[in-house]
Image (cartoon, rainbow, N blue to C red; front, side, top):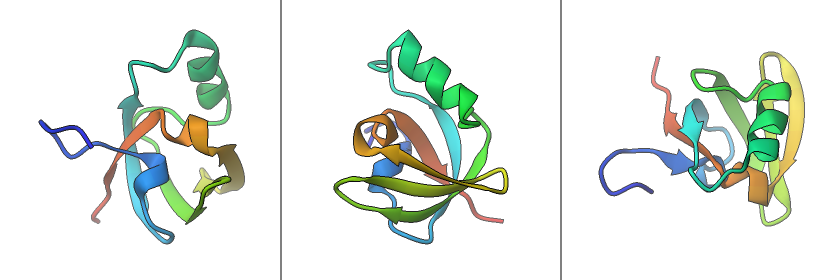
Length: 83
């Protein structure tokens, strides 16, 4: 977690969490950023974490089910979304 804000990697949220993507980690390279954007994981997007484990994260994004590896999930920084 960032010490100055509440951003946390997507992989750190427990199952059932509803979060808003804030940004990508500075360590995420161009290919990773392009892939995440192509999957619909863009800043401002609301995501539901269905499950997060050592192998990857299962997400609901824009009405679709999606699974990304833990390495990629660690590069997506998000905040809890409270309606």
